Length: 353
Image (cartoon, rainbow, N blue to C red):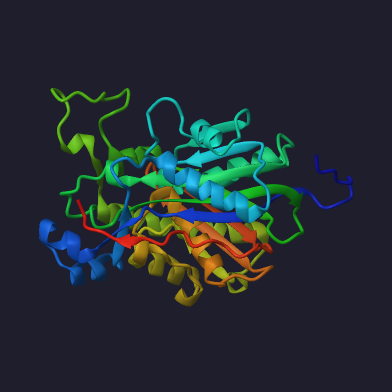
């Protein structure tokens, strides 16, 4: 257990590993356009997305989470952690949680393991939970994974959402350290507004409306989102949450080296960055190639930034997310010294099913 002097730096969670995983099947806009009655130009103009990745029929959220987790653990230099947290909206099953299975498959049987459900804000929420486990002394190392397979819940014929969402997983490893060292996380800002739960929703499948072919419609069994309202709330909440974190930390926007927002679509990313006074050049983007990957989007963008050499030790990184619930959250961290990262994937072009 890390020991600190009463007069020494505060105990903190420090990022020490990162990794990502995308399914092998990469689907370009042209492969969806004809079926959905649209075209590549329209999709790019509205979302900025050129492609997305879809899980194979036998590939589940846990498979992607395990792959991303294994890469992050290798990047951290140790396969040992005391807890595994998986942020997801698409667990393998409604019961049990996916995290214990992920932990077991990584050889971590016996450690604490649980899921976090905060939709596209899930990774930031999970980071906060992992940080809490470390700063409270419960454990010294935590694996935090964001993983989603939206292709299982989005109607493939939904013209609005089928072109936006993709599948993937990203992960980071946190260790106990000091608040003054590179890699330290915090402060955090988290929030929610359940009065708008129907803005981003899958109506059927829970205790409120159990799945029943005789009682539930096709639409109720799939993901739905009121796009214009979500856009308005996302821009406002992400910018407000990010600003709250900067104020807590006493850091100005000009001191941020990289902004890593939830990769909803390129339009939202640009608007939030502009609203904060950040040039878009300082905004990490992965949505063009991977689409909106839900809880995986922020760690995938971090993994890509590390692979591309966009981060150096001591860089200030601002994370912010927004998702159904409604939920939102932000976090500030300083970048750590990490070994070279593995590419999130080396996909083969495929044909959409």
